[in-house]
Image (cartoon, rainbow, N blue to C red; front, side):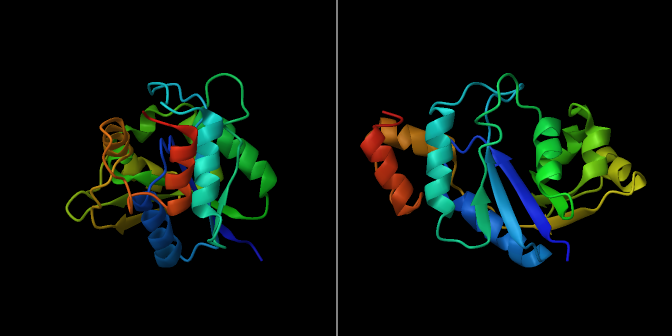
Length: 197
């Protein structure tokens, strides 16, 4: 029987509990069998990450290790050159040919989805789960475009959790606590590796 698999990409610099709460809620609400975390390698439209791809992958691995519905794959960590979403989707489609893939995005991403590299091919291979806050889920041109293409699009309202990787890095730099903002195993890893000092 085909499984429903969520794909959660991101820099995860570092991964924190808001990422995990979001993934757990989407898994529950949408009836996903699994959420696969994909730490970014070299995204073409973002500034370089503060921690290495290997460190960010290891932090995510530690963060998801105790949840049987979560997994992490190094597909972007190990890729040379820019990491376009289409390359990741192709690789996952090859790995899970009989399952239905769903790309998890923020509802704000819908507005710029048409600008993604080879978006039509991405749409043909996976559905989307757009996560946002109440009042930020209006239909826009990208959403209408995806629906016209016959793509599964699920809109999920989620409460805002005021935790960000940027704030966590700033707190570490200032010598302030990040306890309870990241899983304990991630907190320990950051300390042992002296990340974000």
